Length: 223
Image (tube, rainbow, N blue to C red; front, top):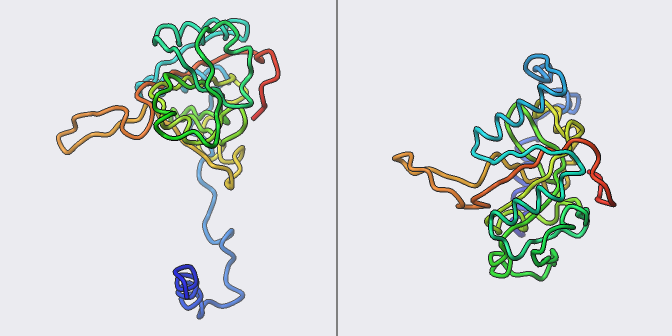
């Protein structure tokens, strides 16, 4: 008997005395909590997202779809990035003006190889205004989870207002739980017992979020 069989056996024994007509799990917990806190317009929701992102020490930028390639290029240049990791489905127009070397997202790339990349640029699945959280789901324009956890500089593009929701429950409605979800609230950081903050512990030290209005041109994958 392996560990899986032992665990499942314990679950079956624990449930042995539960009546078959017992309330199904999906109905056992009341789901009548607030779907969002307060009423906001789409513009106000985006403003709240920007405010909470900044509160988590993410760097927030706003632009139109036509300005996006210039903004991404400027962010990479300001960082001094010579290499940039590119998910396979990323809209090529976003990097059209950048001279940084494109590094493809390859399954065989080692952590050491990814650590040597200066920056990574991705899209996102959804952004949550009330928590200042960006969610990635591994779609082609976001790449595998580790490509946004190892490089020290992450540029994430959020289409507003289409990809912005007010609350976590609203975000969950848009997400598929079987996908590899990565929830990002600011750059990676932790604090010790004396509350000394250290950044870049288990993810990028610098998170830059670009809130872009309008539909970016090109063939980027939709999320």
